[in-house]
Amino acid sequence: MPGDILIIDCVATNRIILKVKLLAAQYRVRPCSNVAEAKAAITASLPDLILIDVGTDTAAVMAFCQSLKAHEDTSLIPIIATGGFSSPQDRVAALEAGADDVLTKPFDDHILQARIRSMLRARDARQELRMREGTRTALGFAEACRDFTAPSRVVIASIGGKTEGGALKLDNCHVSGNAIEQLTTGTERNAPADLYIVDFRSGLLDDAVLFRLLSELRSRSSTRHSSILALLPANSRQAAAMALDLGANDIVTSPVADDEIRHRCRVLLQAKHEAAALRRTVASGLEAAITDPLTGLFNRRYALPHLARLSEQSRKTGRQFAIMALDLDHFKGINDTYGHKAGDEVLRQVALRLQGNLRAVDLLARIGGEEFLVAIPNSDVVHARTAAERLCKLIGDTPFFVGEDGTELCVTMSVGVSLNGGPQADGEEADLEELVNSADVALYAAKTGGRNKVSLSAA
Image 1: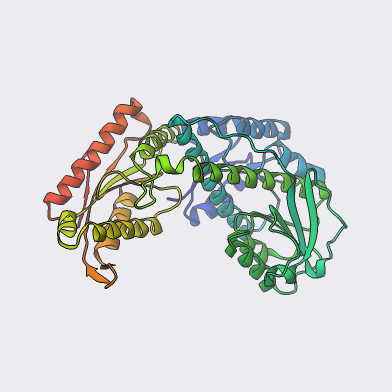
Image 2 (image 1 turned 60 degrees about the horizontal axis):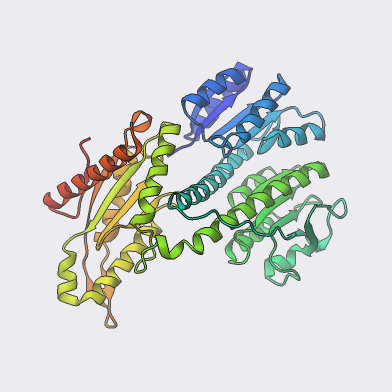
């Protein structure tokens, strides 16, 4: 579903222009003329991103940004600060107050749209990791041990290995240089870095060099989780927008002060280490307890606490989420005819197909023999039905091949869908139980209605 963007600007013309541009990009937009209106709007429903002008009543705006980052419910909302920023220190001050990025007016529409897309992707990833951590805690596991913070590895890559402005000083970091040519060919001298700073401030004669470098770093298993900061010349509008879409975590164009670069590096390194720590948590001690050994999917023990957190998030944001109950049709006949080994292989292949057609933020779990559960945050009836029909066709339209001789099996799946009632729902446990039961009732309707189809709950 499209993102919900809150615009805060005291100038009505600015609000109208931004609203029109963002609506054209399929975002939902809520304009506010001041911080007080914005607070009321956030209380009513949390936005996905905030665009705020810092040119008027700067002190109040900075305090507002700090308060958002200090509160757990709003700390992950990306903030883009816009303004004149007459000095480099003004930009740094906005970043230190809590803005995730700053755009000097007038700013380019392509870069704004690319920054929004990049920030929403990063927000979704961090939100999902935080939710996984909360679910782990709800399961009763102890808090993860704090790892010793070793110095971060930072590589500054530039044409010929020469960086504009000399060496960059970063606390608790090993900073080294590398030629961009070596990174793109995989012959770099250094171990994979926590942060890559790709420095093209001296000039970018061919955009393809930047694009290839980003693609290489994101495609390699050793560097795909590394943070990337791109330093670009002032006249690189198209390249800057494309860099964000190709995987750069952050970009900044010349001229830029070293203080701002250092701040952006600190933020990127912190986010990278936080994500790595949470990934290790999920991948280690929890795996056996919360995953199904046959398919590798989450099991019922994980799914139910995770649904509780989705319900809590739904009440805070005012947005619905969908639950799907999925069941393979006539699965007993597969086991009886071809054996349980073939049945297990079908289940594994079904799991892979479903995984490949759901987002990282969606929940997929095996909760019974041939029963699966899917939960989709921020969904509505149209989106839920479309997703369920896609998954149903995904299983039924393509045969499965099992065994050493590649026996072809045709398998179909029925799906029942229910949606929660949004923020007005009372009682977390009762609400979840009713919601799961509604999905099961809808699944039964799909089964009795002929199978290989989707049925929506009447509730």
